[in-house]
Image (cartoon, rainbow, N blue to C red; front, side, top):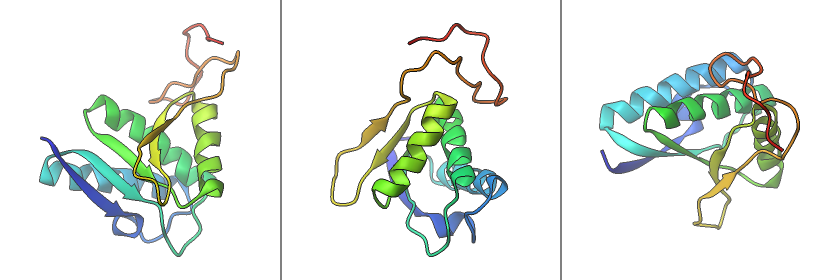
Length: 134
């Protein structure tokens, strides 16, 4: 497994406004990646519909799970406003995610801001028992 693929958001779900749609998109992404045995998926976030914060949050959470499964997701964000939504989720969940901005070929990692709050468990959404770092 060494190939990469690029998927468009609308190939995964017709609308991107709810957390449930985020779960559906993540499952569709997993299925498509497994079908062609890839290790990295570039997911274009460009769409004609609204992309909500809860949808993005679910994608960030699911991408962290996929990372544990050996599948790397790179979000092709549409610009600074969308990147801010990703940053909000990354901060809240205390997870990292990979992204790329338009016109930039470099894949970057979005990391959470330092805080004294304990991180949220990626699988349960509850605060971890691990001590917080800061």
